[in-house]
Length: 262
Image (cartoon, rainbow, N blue to C red; front, side, top):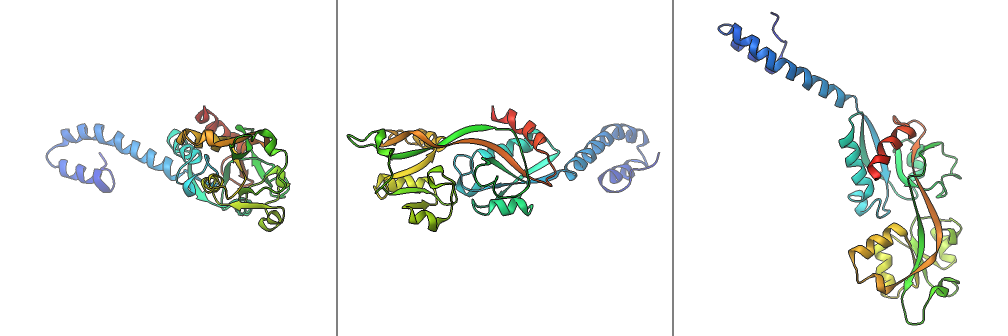
């Protein structure tokens, strides 16, 4: 019988062979299948393709600089449910995400609407079917006598959005200087904007439907303080976008993600 070459199993073999040939057969039956299984598992993980998932602060999808949110939850589930690909979160920014996808610094970006600059970017990309629908609402302080007519005109009102986000009422322009001239200021986070609204530093902010629902659940006293517009600034059609040379296809990633969203 030829001894196994190298490492732990070779040590077992040479320790037992001189006096325990019969025992060696017994140990071989136990350890060799285990060794084969370890090799197969090591080989499988070694051949994993890394998928860099880009993300920027966009609650509830990406929050706390990518440490929490639906995208992080999905990445964990994707890595647990299969071994062909390893998904890794990679930070980007609202304005940098186009260049990062084009230069293959990220392979995919989750929950994007093509209207957010992608159709005019001239960047080749793959896309999944629509995964989620949502929208943007205008939000003001609830005050006596104030109703939905408050949102009919923004003239003379301080409006606040999020830096790098696209809004229909701002003609999908993300240039901070252009928006400033239109009386639109930009904050860094939804929490910051809500705080400024409550302190009456701004008159109207824009919140996506997912964030508005999430904030209301976290702070039940907040809901009655806010007047949320029935009319949406825009409706979302959220997909996963991938660069044109990623190791995974749009069809493959959609097949993996859809069951995890249910």
